[in-house]
Structures are given as structure tokens and as C-alpha cells.
Amino acid sequence: MSAQRKWDNTYSSPDNLVELFENALKNFTNNRLFGTKDAQGVYQWVTYADVGSRVDHLRAGLAQLGVGAGDAVGIISRNSTDWMVCAYATYGLNAHFMPMYEKELESVWQYIIGDASIKVLFVSKPDIQAKILSWKDDFPSLERVILIDAPADSKDSMHSVEALGETNPIAAVHPAPLDLAVVIYTSGTTGDPKGVMLSHGNCTSCSQAGFHLFSDLNETDVSFSHLPWAHVYAFSAELNNILQFGGSIGFLDSLEHMTEDLPKVRPTFLISVPRVFNMVYSKIFETMQEEGGMKLKLFNMAVKAAKSKRETGKAGFTYKMLDKLVFGKIRAMFGGRLKYALTASAKMNPDIETFFFDIGIPVYDCYGLSETSPAVTMNSPSGHKVGSVGRLVEKVDVVIDTSKVEDGSDDGEIVVYGPNVMLGYLNKPEKTAEVMTEDGGLRTGDQGHMDADGFLFVTGRFKEEYKLENGKYVFPAEIEEEIKLLPYVNNAFVYGDGKPYNVLLLVPYMPMLERFVRDFKISVPASELLSLPAVKELLLKEIGQHLKKRFGGYEIPQKMAFLQEDFSVENGMLTQTLKIKRRVVVQAYHGVIESIYE
Image (cartoon, rainbow, N blue to C red; front, side, top):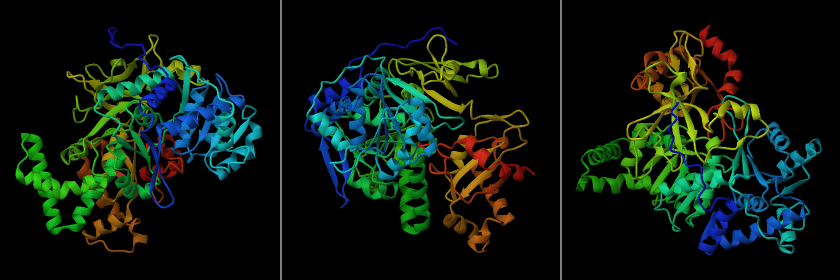
């Protein structure tokens, strides 16, 4: 551990979320802020001033309900104007906000409501309200359950609380930088959820650091909101960030409508995750292969011309023509105005990252955790290196602790210092002590190294790694992401903890799998396809060929089993940012895994 750190644990103004929004109201009063699709499929927009009035009214209404400093206000809702109004009204009372997901296990809601002692809870749908009310009496702290979309004359409607506040106005409180603002519950890929306590200074310093690396953002810029604000990534990088430069956000209606909504909102920047770009990339190449003929030929020519431009820095006539003819259509899928995208939550595949740069949509890979608000490092227009997760954001420092790895390795545990580091885990002092160093650093559990140019490379996660019987360490997530690039794969899970070799649980994409095996003269009804040993042998061979470009032989799965049901948020096997919950999958498919080895 190095003793020489460069982190700056001070806070720049604004150092609280209340003042952040007040500045936005003053500077961007009549700008559009949020766009929501109506029943006719048309986006309707509200201004900063519209939202500001609602925040004032709800803040005063909550005060009338007895909410004050130190109280917890919760919400179960997808991203919306109402979500933001609830959050910023809460901050103005120096109370703290507790967001939860609509698509969540009922037991998790119960755990959070009890753990956080939530006093007032906003919910988005009547069925959610009914579930909460059926066991509300088990939680003495929970005084009111308010339905956001209830009729205006209902006592427990958001509208009625706002109306109550409109007739009893109060001024907003400006919290101190170290006052608790929000508690973000981690979904937990390997363990139980923990409430990450983030202060006002944590939140504002993080959003400021990100904005300073993308300082060309201005009030004409638009984001397309498709990641949940109940997760700290979109909460900081999108919601709080947009207020700094007066931009606007259009809300995704549903994933099924994403391709039709993007051209309506026409975003200029996108806060996303690698999985989204992986799916788009796979779909593009799958479509081109299906089309064949001249379309495939032009696509391959365009890819080759873009590569030449990247390597030589020269854009000739051929490139310009093909860029407009081929890549212009891909850019149009995103609305035609996308300047760049930010991705985090998992490491971006270097080939896919380069492809999107080549077609004119720079995708900047970043790194952070809920416990760091979340930004630690970011690639950006001012500094970018493929395969890395960028350079340190302002005021933050990283130390690489090599005490956990073999001598001579540059890799070690990433330890983070800075004003972005959390206050701790709610009601879990022992868990907090496990990750905090004596001098204020956060042990991330991630493995990586910093190169000579200051770019961080994340190479694995200590909690998710395992050791094969031969002593070799495996980081399965990276292998899984590579397998999921294959067109006949919906999802993949790699396992081998303490075993002689890795095995694979594969969720197939049946239309492409049927087409793929047909080329190898395997023609049986779809209902029989997954039971054929020849199909498994063929896929293992193809997957092995695909993986050996990036992975050692010991990392490549030697046997496999098919799964009928995909991993999802709904069945509890994916987090809200689409990471696999490894412990849950192993428990659910323990028998299947053991049968593969047998």
C-alpha cells in the first residue's frame, strides 16, 4: 500500500443536492427537463420551473405529514418526473431518500423498509400498494403509503400531499456535505443486499467530476433514460448530472419500445451498460449475415474503410460514402444525434468498443461502485484507451494493494480514496469495517493495475474469482460476456470452483441455434435439439474456438448443459444492471452443475 496519495477530500460548491437543483432552476428555468410518452406515443415535456414548483409543494406537504431531518422517505417506482420530485423534496427537509425497484422480490421490499425504518413510502402502482398495505402493520415505522397515480381527491395520493404543501409553503433546508442524502441498496451478486449510505457531498462531487470530463455538454443535450435511478450509476451520471448543464431526459416507455422511442427522443448522450451495446452489435452482424449479397458486401467494405481511417487518420471518399450509406443507418437507430455514450457495470469488449468508435458513436468505458457514488475512473474525449476503464476522476486516488496476489504481479486490489467514498453501510458496522481501511480508503474487491499513462485496467473480482483444482484462478464474468456475443446464445454461466475444469450453463437463442446446426446437417424438431449430444459437442467446439482468441485453455469450458429459462431480474438471477447473481444461480442449478461433472 502506497502512503503517497493525491486525493482531495474537500467539496466544491454546490456541495448538496438541494443547492444543485436550486442553481439549475435559476439558470435553466424554462428549459425542458423531462419527457414522458403519452397514450398516443408522443413525448410530452415539462420544464425545470414545472418540476421546481412540484418539488416545493411536495416538500411542504411531507413536512405537514411529519417528515423532518433524519427521517427516511422511500419510493417503489420506475424513473419518472414523480421519482425526481419525491427525491428532491426529501432532500430539502434534510431527510434521506430510499429508492427501490418495481421489479423486485416482495421480501426485498420488506427487508429495506424494515432496515431503513422508512416513514413515508411512495408507490407507482395500485397492485404494489395493495401488497404493501397487506403487511404494513408489521413495520411500525411506516406511517403512510402514498400512491403516485391515485385520484387527486384520494387522501393517500401524491397530488393530495402536493396540494397540502401548496397551501402551507416552507423553505428548503440546505444540508451539510456529510449529511445523509440517499441509501442505495446493492443488489448483491454474491451476498445479501447492503444499504450504501451516500452523503450530499458524495453525490455532488461525483457528478461534478464526471461533468468536468464531458464539459461540452450543454442545455441542448438530451439523454434517454433506460437504466434505473434506484441504482447509483444512472442516479449520478444521468439524473444529478443533467442538472449541472440544463439538459433534458426522455424516459424509456418499455424495453420492447426502445427502438421506436430512441428516434423520438433523439438523444445526444447515453448512460448505458455494455450489455446494451453487445446486443446491438450482435444484432447488426446477425442481420448482415442474414441479408447477405450486396448489403453484406457494402457492410464489410465500410468496416474495412473505418479501420483504415482509424489507423491512418485519413478519411477518403470511399469512407465518407460508405459511412453515410451504411453507418448512418446504424446511427439513425439511436436517433441520429448521439455524440457519445458512457458504459459501466461490466467491462466493455475491446472489439465492440472499437466498432462503435469506428461507426461514429464513441463508447467510453468507466469504472465505479455503489460505495464510491459511483465514479472512480472514466474514459473521456480528453483521455481514452481501449481495454481500460479510464483515468482517475478529479479529487480521487487509487492505490493498488498487491498483498493478495502472487509476488511480481502488477495486479492487486483496487483501493479508492476521495470525497466520493460512502459514509458506510446502513446498520452494518461490521460490514463497513471489512471494506474500509484505517486511513479512509475503500477496498473494492476488484483486481487491477494502473499503467504508466494513468489508465486503470480491471482484470477481475476477488469475490467472484475461484480456483480450479489445478490451482489456476478463473474470473468467469469476462468469459461469459465473450460467449454471449455468439448469435445463438441468450445467456451463459461459467462454473468450476474447486473442480478439474470449467463447465457451462447455456441459455440458447433457439431461432439462431436451429439455423446454426442446420449448416452442420443436423435437422431435428426444435423440441429434440437440446437433447442431442452432437449439438453439445458442436457448440463446445465452436465456443472453444471463439474463446481461445482471448483466454487460456484452462479457462475454456469442457462440458455444458442447456437451460430452458433465461436469467432475469424477475426470477432473481440478475441484478438491475443485468449482472448475474452468482450465488443465486449456483444454488438454483447445483444439481445440474454436479450432474455435468458426473
